[in-house]
Image (tube, rainbow, N blue to C red):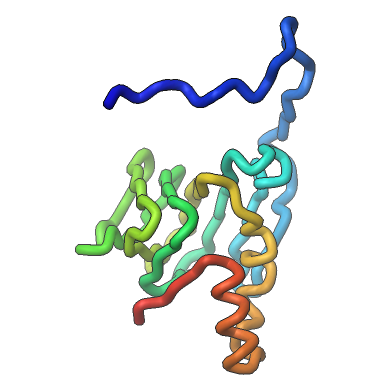
Length: 162
């Protein structure tokens, strides 16, 4: 079956001024306790649910999440700088600047920075999902009860396999 464009969502005749520019020097929206910085480049709110795009600047030896999958969103990784270990469900790969990994909905994946140098990557979620709360609260799961933790991960479409 041929792929086609989706149905129109804009019905005007002349276009509109609606773009959003974010300068490169904009401070991170979130800095984790380990120093990793997350930039909310395009949120589900700002894209009307089309996608979410985040830049993650990881400190050396920052680690990362264990193997997991999502039931409602795909996740894409694009390495901007440094080396990010990416798990594609079958093997770990030391991804470097310019490397790309697409994980369809349901695909097993993980990522981490185990190197002695910082690393930076783009994360794209599609369709958009409110990942900001996940990024902001994931560091608190150790203090949650088992039920609170299970509810948090279910709310944020994160299913662990380890």
